[in-house]
Length: 309
View 1 (tube, rainbow, N blue to C red):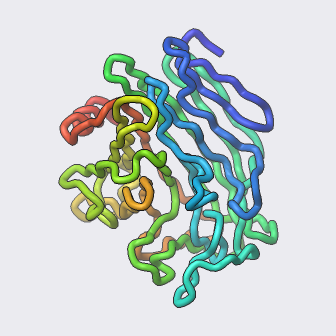
View 2: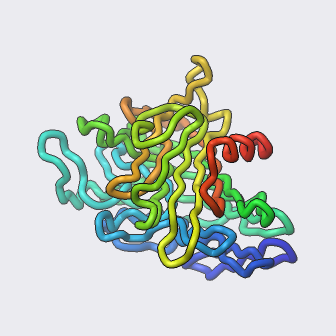
């Protein structure tokens, strides 16, 4: 604990980070094992605004394996670490439990909080259904920039995934497997049910047509059930995520929907598989901004300019 952000660790289960000025639990990081069918993996839920409103969903009845904010892989060398049914081209989504893998918590390298920042640094392993070791991950989640004046705060999610197989790991998606505009994989935010039909905003446009677009950031704002008002969630790429070298466009394409649910993922493999050779490491860093109110494009741009990487 500290005089700033407060952190509480229920060992073997979860870590919560609280803003002591408001008493609001900003996030809960859950790392206990859950149902095998849902591809067990650590996740953040609930994720809250500074006003205390929840901006994630957990086990919704349309996709029980959607859990708040998590990092996962929908198609990984034939395995499904996303959870639920697996997409097979020409046959649709099938119940194939032998494809559903998991992530396992190994330990924490750091769990700390001070006046302005909280850190959760974790080591994990990735496994197919049979339990073989396919990858090792080092993950770091930092809570920072809690600004009660603007009603916003941010987290940075960093990941380094090392291939421990003797053959390449192939990161794909339903789209690389043949389904149109379903390129989800990687870091995925599932919004609350109330955010269905929410406003999707990008640097140069808005609306569901931003599916498969490329840009440094994407946001979705929605109106709460139960309490008055709106919230905005922004996902942004770190500059080093851009390996395209062509006009500054990010190689990742955005998976984004506001119908039939609200969700955003900066996909690793929307149209093309990402191949990770044996022993190589995939590194990515993202920022998630959680803000009270319906922010406009100008507000989002100004915020990101004022909080450089």
